[in-house]
Length: 250
Image (cartoon, rainbow, N blue to C red; front, side, top):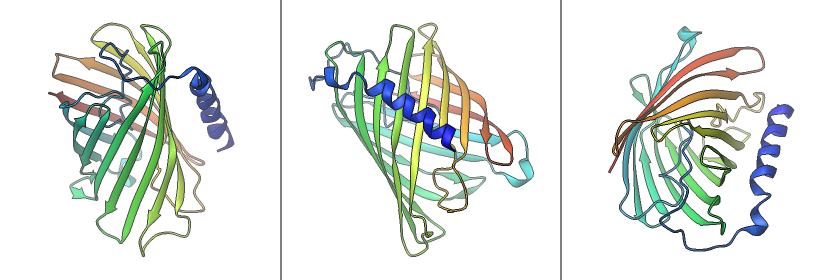
């Protein structure tokens, strides 16, 4: 656990070292777009423009220990109501059971004068259907583009659980960092690190780390795909997980 937290602390320091240089200018049309993580995606890209619409489906499936694990998938719709402000509605499903109802808001604050640094905030609310539990999450999202190829994005925040069925531990960390290499206009490689079970509020359980290498393929202006195979590292076992996200943008 301590090594995971040290990793995210270093990422946060790297991303925020440019903060004193940051200007709260209006986002321009020539913003250097930074890709989205596959497992923990954004509500549209940072700096979304009014009218942007995205429909996507993420599926995660076990590649080992399948008897004790489930296929998790989630269709979602994202829409930018105004410039820099987008909303999302998602249906998390486990096998063939609808587990929760989820909604999110995301606002982009601004970018640096160079256009390389951009940051925003995301708020999520999730109602667990089978119990009286509500998960409220707030994340800060800094991102930095080093050059035409390399960029990095982090999501750092907390999740608070409410409701009569809440566990004794009601607050947990949300940590995500992804490094991207855009090798062509249509192909991007990524390496995403994520605490893989942010909804686990059991005090006796430590955070698990998911490392997910991934490839993003852009087929056209409207259609793209993200896929990868990664490992979840726990205290006593390693789970191998495959994932795929199909995306339609309008």
